[in-house]
Length: 406
Image (cartoon, rainbow, N blue to C red; front, side, top):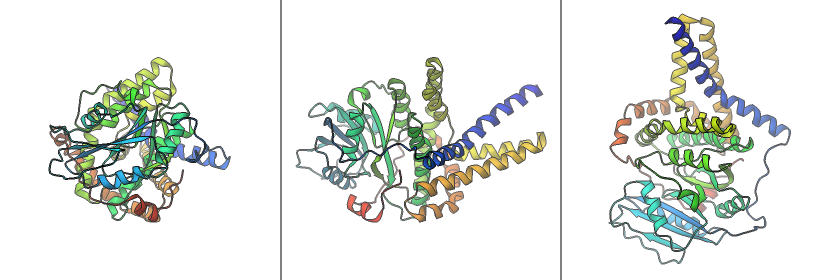
């Protein structure tokens, strides 16, 4: 019995250590490639195009259209012309917003959809013309003027699905800056470095572009949360590479207070556990096909939220005080290396110094996530929509933010 427990303890420690030390290894690879001038070449938006794909920009709005006009405005200011905007106004009966523009189609479902997946399907079913590619936005997003032009380059290269570069729209509060720091870390570890290594990138629940025919192949069984968990697990098995386009920037509203953070993270944590099985499916598929890309993707789909990994590290360190004091010291070192790597990654990726300095308040952010974990059952019963209210136009964002590092 003791031997079996010891083996389980060793396996768990290897897994947790791998996840926590992975960012450090990626940071070292990044530094080496930079020093040797081996980084991937940047795609220029104004480079000659071989074909002009037809894009459907799908905006999913729920209960409010207040933030839709700035997003539509940013899309209408694209340096690319072959697109149509579809605004799905779900449960927005009292909002009088209208559009009289040939590129904007405002759709008002007769019955409430109450799910992002249903809103996307509703838009697809009401396309006014065939579209090669669809791009999914939340109503609080903004798109850089070169956004669609850069995406067209990627699809002309043969990619079938492309995740774009999520950047903060607002960094005016402590929680917004901490939220932005988390995005920068994830952009680096799950997208930029995957791209540098020729591997498929994780997607966000927004700013994901894919061939319309590819999206139609996905069948959903659950509608409350986890849109990105389901879609990426299916797509990555169907195509050679899920690409990342760091030059295509989409701006997203960051959480600006603790209560909103808890609501958002409750939904995200619930989605992680609900769709946990998809990580195993991708991992097993990768083993069966002999695909390192799928195996690595599946391993990272199985990765728990970072605050849970850190809690596991502290727990393992405490257990090892009685089992192996040397290993207790090892876990202290692992946590220290992870924290240092997190800080360095944000320092490398940041555009504003105040994002980096906000990291010293990260314990407050972690505490809110712990509280969110205790409320995950609520996410199975309601949509738990995060309230957004930052009415900013693309000129406002570009004026105060330098271009992100790629």
